[in-house]
Amino acid sequence: MVLVALMALAVALSDTTVGSLRQSHARVTDTSLTLSAESIANLAFNHLQNLSNLSTELNLAKNRAATDDAAILTDEVETAAIVDGRSRLNGLEPRATWKWIGTMTVPIMGTREVQDMYVITATAAAGGPARLYNADGSQNPIEDVNRYRRRRVEALFIKFPQSIYRQAMFARKGYEFMGSATTDSWDSKHGASAYGTVASGANGDLASEGSIVVQKEENVKGDVNPNISMPIPPLTYSPPATAIKLPGPSKGTLTKTTAELASGSYVCTSIDIAVNNGITIAAGAAVDIYVDGPIILTKDWVIPVTSTVRIFQNDYDADLGQTTINGNITIGCPQNPKSFQLYSLYDGMDAEGEDPVPWDIKMNGTAQLGGVLFCPYASFKLNGTFDMFGSMIADSFRESTEMGKVNGNFKFHYDESLSDLELPFPPSLVVVGWRSYDLGFAEFTNPNEPNPALRVRYDDP
Image (tube, rainbow, N blue to C red; front, side, top):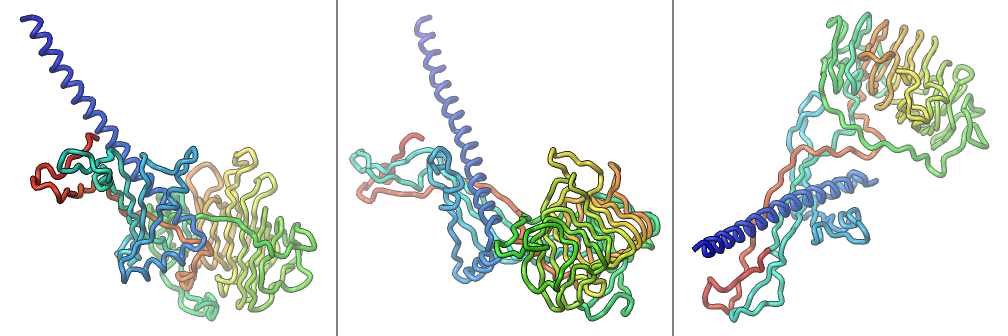
């Protein structure tokens, strides 16, 4: 009796152990499936984000909507997933597609806007393979690929607006707006109307991804928008191979030009203007200047109202010097801020990865600047009496390790015509929705089997 009881217990334990092992295997498979599907979606998303012609591809996807065609990204995902010469996830080739699905209203930087909506569909599979069986019980050589366990991830995304100059000033970190600092707005009508020649408006907004403390509410003629999201698009510093070296014939510090710069691309190691308006720009010219290092503006540099100067500043070793706008000077084009645009990757770090001073770019003195400043990694030190015509985007406004502060007699005049100025970079994609679910199994049958219960059998996964 004891022996029989022990044998029965052993059988029960064996059944329990087998059942537990199967459950454990199923849990591992579920986890692996979920991770694989999410990895496929992430690889597909990263591929799209890094396309140099992303704007074109987004438009093509919208054009395909009439036929509901989805673009296949499987090859790109496989290439990105290569490990040890294999490009299979979970032992099965991944499947990824994307397409435009319509429009929806989403919150953007304190407002709600209608945006095009796209979806990435990523599918992962595990288990099996399941096989069809013939009526006589023999195994059919055809694999029933639809009987793999499959999981799908759908990621909804939008193109973050390229026209992000929608406020007088924005900082990724929070700040205090104090003292005699003020904001207002006007519409230059793309240079046709200078500030003061038309009535000032109330669109001198403040914005931040952090908190904003306003000491005197009456000084802000506009909205205060704290805790808003502004994804930073991928920034690159890539001077064209055909860029003309300044001051010439080799690349060095640009202090002045011997002739007006015509439309085209130029590159130099730094800018340090030696005399007032030492760098001259031809009327109506579209000039791109790539700067490897510091920019020091202590003399007038006035851009013609019909011209456009875009400065692309690379990140550099902070020990080479700080970027500075200082003195009783005029920089850019107060009448048409679009004429002067600064796009900077500078983050204030030295070669050892340390921050020598709390601020990275200093704006000081009795000066006026007409332009747009896109410096999302830099901390600004704002001091003195300064009139800013246009819009600025920074990492922070601080001159110490404390919370950022805008103080002194700074006056920010937002140009409402900047609302349609787009960044000269590929757009940034933002995921706004995500769901994951199991796919149902297909019902494959063997038409030669009269008994429905015997038409299909499957291997134990």
